[in-house]
Amino acid sequence: MTVEHLKKRVQERMDWREQDKIKQERLQARQKEIDEAPDTKFTDFWCDDCELYVTAEGRKSIANDWNNGVYIAFYIGNCPLDHRVTRRITDTIHDPYFKHFKRTRSEEADILQPDDYGFKTLYGNQLDT
Ligand SMILES: [Zn+2]
Image 1 (cartoon, protein in one colour):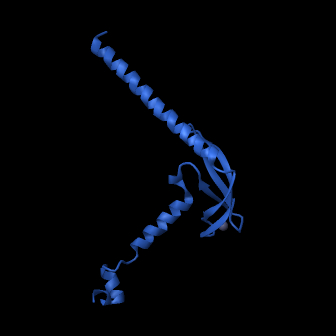
Image 2: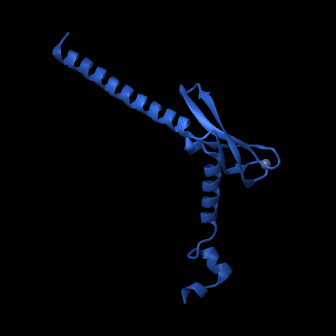
Image 3: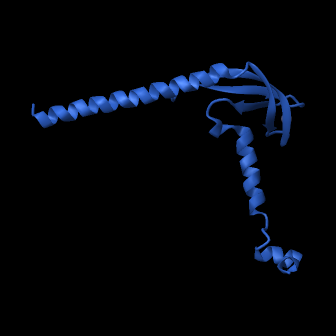
């Protein structure tokens, strides 16, 4: 085995250990996030069935994400009509409330802006003066 070959193997081993360390730290941070979240929490939810924002008591729930080998935590609540609503504690990028919020915000942003041609047609040029 050449020295270069050995060096490469040592480097690979170090890289692997470094990656493993980062992975462990992420897992710990995630666990801390789950542990520190209160068991119940009054929070805002988006109910997809009612198409309404509702405030309800969420109960912390933890599930195993088998695909990624991690735990995912979320709050489960019920809207006034008893539909199940959820909020993410971990992986907030998948949070249904924020997802909906962002979607409606970008839809609003798509609604005519003052410098749009359509806006001027509808409202005239009074903003130009
Ligand atoms: Zn509902």
